[in-house]
Length: 298
Length: 242
Image 1: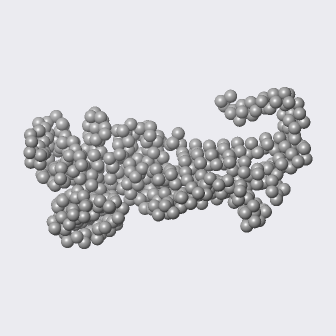
Image 2: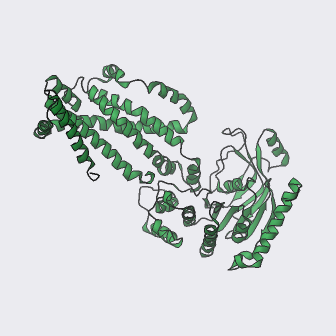
Image 3: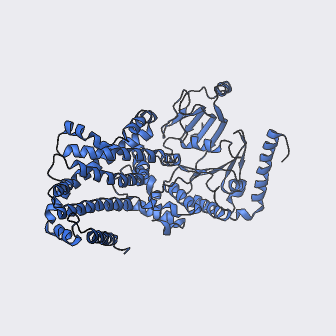
């Protein structure tokens, strides 16, 4: 196993128990973070074990997934809605609900710091923009009553300035637009300086212009402070623009292609032919997968 | 008018009062001026009775916010506790708590304690139920979000559950404090010689209508003060919800 990788999964299988609330699995789902090696008791997810799961009425979301994330690289997981993208992201973020069952193995690098930007931004309406941004630092410092060091507040302020949010610093999220909320969520996650940043369809509810502006900002941030980004999306263009590695998932939750995206590096990426060629290539892969499954033409 | 709501409401009440004073011209309807003069002359006397009542209400509010609030959170988070306690609460809630006053006095004596317990009983149910509902209504995405930031149990209470339930807590307090003051007035007619309720009733029995109305003014101002405090705290801690 390659030790430099942040996360490696082998034969990862994931299913939701139909009996919600009763954890029938032979493993506890509430893993503690920072564990070195978390292997499940399921005998590395052999297919016979899974089929019995299915007989019990469990819904299989992800089947035999091999994935490894290298440090300081961006990954874009592309797939149709409902294929298990978000579930996979939750598995990486340790946010799976209690009625889920994991098979195979995930090994997480020791002390890995993960931060997640959720689809609905995850901001707290009762905290100002600045307080929302500072929250992870507050939780990390673990002494809630003592004031945060000024350097932390300064860092947060600079990050908000960087994302052009300084005039909204003392406003509540309810007064912000969708794009602004999303920028606060990204500022909050980036400020934690995580080893791995997970983005769950971060721009899907924004209009096209705001979306492009935000995608540019994320890319700029990545060049300023590189970290590993794992992005889940259903937009081909977004995956090609933000992913150095693009993983294509089909409807049944299998990864059908893993592509190195060379067009990522160019400065005016959106205006170049390589970008559109890459998009077209992925479109064909997705169409092929769809074709195979439904056996009628698009 | 808008800048001085207290002054404006006071003037309006005085106006209506004066109207009825002139219309009725009976001894049990004293003149507003005479009554106000009484309030100024006997300020310390009124204040001492008022402070006793305020102490009884204030302690009750404190107790119920802590006990009712914790129980509400517990019920909301634990299905089994909810299934066990909610029917019990629904059965006990509609019973007029004043009916328990003889029983309470039997067990807790004639002093302050039984009055505090009676008021607490009235506040308790409304606060417990509204906290329970507001915690139940916290969207699951907030739990996911705080968990994704690496929060522990304490952070969850401090950054999600407490702030999310505060607006409902203040609303419940506003609704129940009105009832609590009326019941306090009733409870202060038994086995006590202090408290604004006693003062009003005592003045009535002495046919001192001026003093009685002065007492009514005092109890209304106390209510006003409590409501203003709740409003102030809400503005301070729930600025986001307005």
